[in-house]
Length: 618
Image 1 (cartoon, helix red, strand yellow):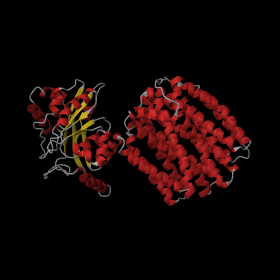
Image 2 (spheres, rainbow, N blue to C red):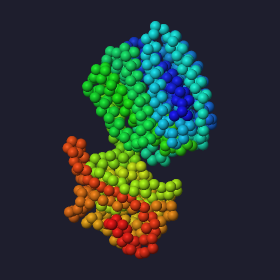
Image 3 (cartoon, rainbow, N blue to C red):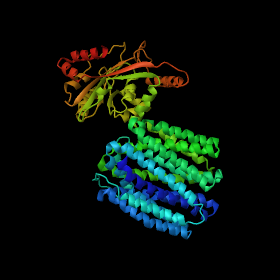
């Protein structure tokens, strides 16, 4: 934490100054116009702070390719002083255009150094410091919003603006001084990018596409900023117009909002070290949506309203940090500045849309309908994220499967690998649910499965399989048309293993009909092991407890339908939340059988399969 302190302090003064200036314009400059135009002034001011991010984020991403991040950061802090002088002129002459122009320039300055500022987190703390660094930076940012907003709300009620002028200059000066104390072991970017926003978006979008699922992280994180911007502007309008609160009372509620987000960011940064917090993001988003719906429908008193808003903010902080950390964790040093610049551009498109959305909604409906709009968007987007990000889907499935099953993972440490080592995973196939259960339990592993072709034609399941880059296996029991593709599976598997991918397939190719694993004359496992790469570890998985369940073929003549069973299981899971139900005990045993299969492959295919059957059935 100590090594991040200079960066935190510099960020604190910068964010405070942004919010002091913006809030002063919202309260003071808005009073220079008629009542009917005040909402437009508030939203225009918010838009002026973010518009530069839309136009200059590509330039911000390019500057660290030419200069050090610290140089960019410090130059921008120097420019903050003349910008404050322009703002002071605007207030002194009560000229709304000069005041909003100062906000616009402040937004430009912040946009230019933002990728450098966040790129320094990895340079200062390394990969292991990402969660702490991001949690602290975001907590400090919202603390700055809190202090800046509260200070401005009180400054706005003073009889003259002289103290406001001193505060603006002081914050800019302190931020510049603090920036000179930052030290970092910088990793320079070698990526060449365009300063044209359209070309930058197109090129960087292609780059981000190489990190599967990262687009969804960026867009959900941008939705957080949309939510935050919408809340901040609607609170100023709703508290004063609908609830009849004074600027200082409104400042208290804005302060509680900032405290909530600050606390959420701090807690989220600490929890992300211990838990897979990204997996909880959808639930957090849906919880925020429920609280916003409560505000909309209940129209609570000021005290209850403040509590609900603070709760939304706290959950929002928890929601945000895992998404921030995921970008830092997955993107390499040389590409991080470019990706952060892209994120800035996208997120501020969302923030700019927040101002537009608020204007549109409040033009046709009462102000409280903004809370309804935010709730719907954030709730639906959180649900979609579950089915668009593989690790989150697996984790979500794990948590819900465990509502009905007591799962014991034995020997899971055998899945750990050293650098340059990959996995070939060969489970036994007891029931329809065991693939879902395995991938849910192995949510933190990157595994490519081979899956029966029938599952690819089920709409939702087909989409889920695409997230895993699953390989389609034709069913030769129904048709011989897929024979050529089956012959290609050997080479597909070996090519993937040689590339370092982790592969999972079932040697038997079907669920057991009598509780005993039977591989017979199937050749896939034998052919794979015959040509097994030296760096591949083979893991056999024994599964106990699923035979005899509704997911197995116990007492049935055909394999049960996965769709009908999922629907039935969902009802059972729901019932366990109301009526206690005993969980079924299931054991997943992971065994390193690398040496065994190397011995078994010396025999014939049938002998090899017999040894594998004995392993599963022992």
